[in-house]
Length: 156
Image (spheres, rainbow, N blue to C red):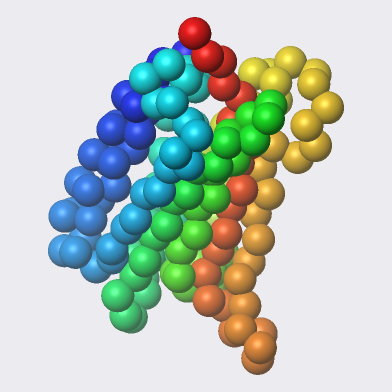
């Protein structure tokens, strides 16, 4: 476990580097619940980076307009909820674009992170630790993806 502040700084640096890498193709905003005392709250490192990476590489990279990535942390009683929302092309179209000439490569990042979270919660009844929702407009067109992640934490 590392201080929440350190994990946030690493995530911010990662997203800033990706933004530069893709020519400022997207903007991002990271908001933290003021109830989270970032210096004395400890979280497992690098959990959210996997989901931010997916949003950028699969949702925002192929977008034909300016992309947006929002990451919002909210303190709950037993865990922190992190909401990652993008206005990207959506998982369906991203999966289609990812399949060159009949080849398909299964990404393990999300599955490994889910398993890691389940181990960290150590059989506590917290329900789903990761929930992924495809966002759609009233016509059923993709408007992005929303991921909710439950993060265990400790305090000093």
